[in-house]
Length: 195
Image (tube, rainbow, N blue to C red; front, side):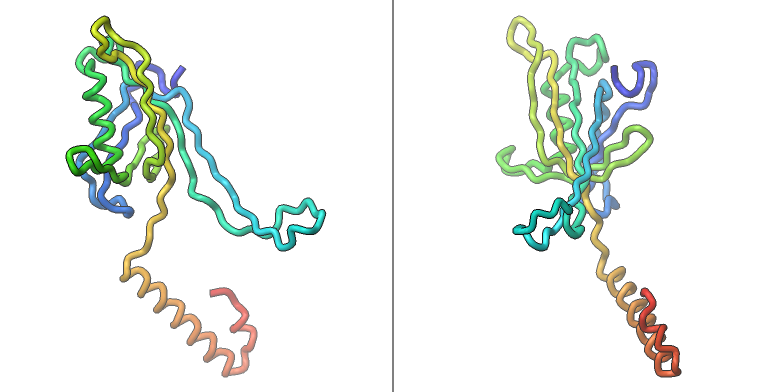
């Protein structure tokens, strides 16, 4: 059973963007026919072990968080049972592929788009890392009637623009200058405060 019942009009949508800030939509969007039965969100943590020779069971010192990953499967049904107007499985797969990838050199080259996935009342900003098509049902002439698309995504982190970087540096410089002035005036604890 999928997360939303069939009478609920909220279906997962995937929308393509040109940039990592998700400010320029490419206009490509795909709404799934059937919501995924499961939606997995994974987070992983890396630790740095100081000395591998010790018998300590400690995890070590926190190093970093890896990108959040999402995986789910999309069922594309061309039997007409789910949606009588969307029966062409190949066309559905092509539409989804054009949302997930920039395609160039007449289909010989692919580059992942930035994708916003709207689902479960949330928006996930990510890029595709794996895309596998499994054809499951065919008509008598071999045309696919149903396909299962297994998708894996990795979250994207927005990088600040040059202007944002300059503003942050200016705030840090101003904060440090003010602390140095207070320290000169006799308040040495001001240098130990966090930025």
